[in-house]
Length: 227
Image 1 (cartoon, helix red, strand yellow):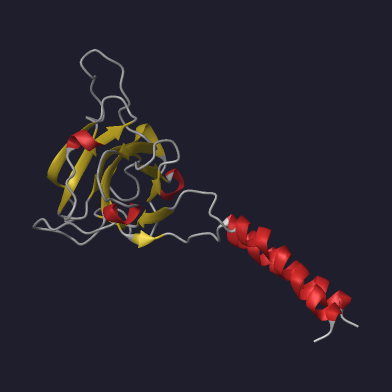
Image 2 (cartoon, one colour):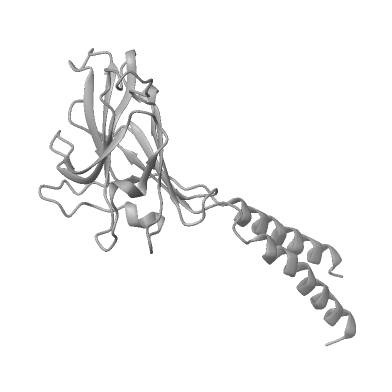
């Protein structure tokens, strides 16, 4: 092997060191699921999306973001939004209502609740009364986006909360929700129950795109230098 070939390989090795460094994830791990089953509206539509992620603000916490897709519903009326959300936990974990911190005012947490709509029981229910007051205080009644965190649980990961319930009866779905305040036409109801555990499409992480681009640049650079 001649010296020029060795030199090129050494330069390539030094080039790849920062490239591999760029592949260290820069975003928290997350998973997303669609709620595409309903007791009143047609199945197969992504009515809500649940995203579970490692907290970027408190180390060890798990963050939930539950979003309603208004365009998937009949035209909204007054006070449209989600007034209950249900989820499960891995049976190996010890989680209580005290571990769940909800951003919305006037929402509370209950355990071992039936979601209705033939979707069975779930380990936890987060709920608002939907329309009344909150003891004279202002509150978030129905929401198009619900955020909450699970804190202080040893050994949990984002996958610890994407599981079916062990309660009886259980439909096998990971999540459920109650959404109300939309037009009763054409389906005859202004509220409905939803459930699902359909994985959402996960985009390619930015770090992977950077790595692929860098490798492509290296290949082009080497081809241009080849006699």
